[in-house]
Figure 1: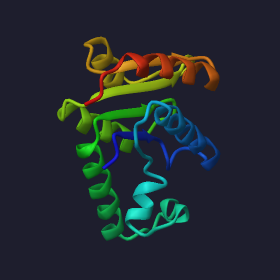
Figure 2: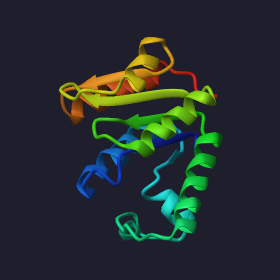
Figure 3: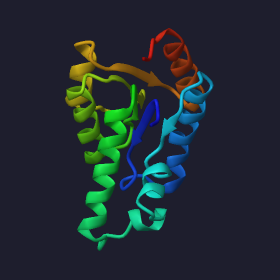
Figure 4: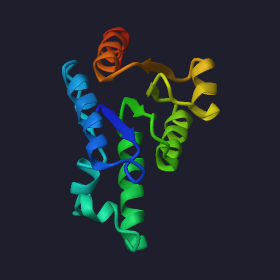
Length: 153
């Protein structure tokens, strides 16, 4: 079981973009927490490769396995972090699930991106901690500051 689930767009983002999720994981690990990164950990759990994520003909049984693995990882996590700069229906579903489970949630987004009300609304209500950043360095600095104030149990 990982302490922190890290979410973000996979199908609508180039693979180079996925590195930001891995960098977020490194910041989280600085605080002693274990992480679940779907494009690494979920794929390992279901014995698939990154190439399979981009296959539009992926069998529905595998898609169900990915869904079940991610839902279980979110359920077992103590904290949910999502990078929401790039649109993703899947990440939105995961955020909704984390909200229903009353998980602590942090969302990060570049300052110039229009973010859905389904993230900003809960953030305004105090259900999501929301970080706007100018660049990756700024994002990680703000994330470190926020993580230093959270009690994750």
